[in-house]
Image (tube, rainbow, N blue to C red; front, side):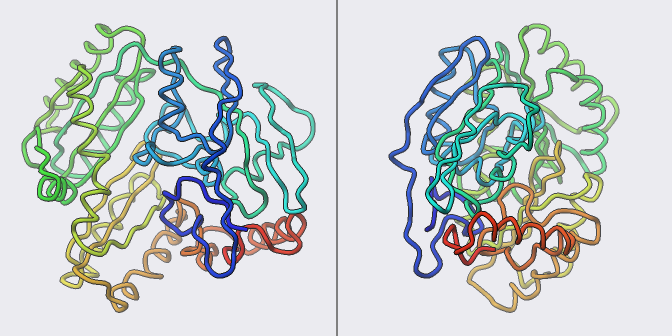
Length: 391
């Protein structure tokens, strides 16, 4: 059985391999309840993330995660892959915001742990087994999730930085000066900017630079937040960390600036065959891998670009070519995974392992951990019917 939600994953986790039956959650799209006092939403697994946000916003709340695929991804798939996204810096991962799950196990029994409690310290926290398990231990059918209040004021800064070291220094100052209102800190290199300009006809609003940073603040007082952001921008420009910058507080302008970052994936599809890598690294090492891959691949690749969630150490490394090349793939893998392992990173920051990365888990986890995972799988799915060929 192959559980399938919005099918927006990038590692083949929701794609059948051989003889599986697809079990779609598309019709399981009902909101079960919402508590406007606690902000706890209970819904079925097939609810589309953007639809949930649209349901919550008039009530003064938002979903704690935001993804580029929000228009089609399902909340059940988000939970099954422990999706991160753009709001993780502010609201944390789903391991903290998911309060309970309903899961159908391999033998057909229903595990109802659909709690709506912030605190419950009785026994093992079983829901954590299924968050990020990619449907290999059970199928998530309903979710209870804690939703934060919708911020009254959202402001954006889009900055140009001359080097990645300046991106890092700007981040340190950003956390210090913006503190409690900081909700996103994203970066992209100039290669990404050129792709969205060329293929999507988007406009760079600042001076051309090797790196760009998008900073979002979310708070309760628009004037207060704008003043803090303006003071921050003056400081980093005066310190030569940033060569140019623009602020936005109006919805249309904010959306236009976010498009530069969110539509990079779309632009890449127009550039040829794309080899995608979603990895976690210590923040200071985040862009070193991109630099290394540019040298290693040289003219074998059309473009090597990097962007991601700098606030949580998540890099999206993308390599494009005019056509598929097995020799290019051999030059990338397993070198990328070996490089990541050398610095104690993760070969999958937020996309999971799926079918594409199942053989590389040892680069991120010790053999004892892998053995324990295999034992959990045998115990919960002795016949191996849940998302087979992916463990």
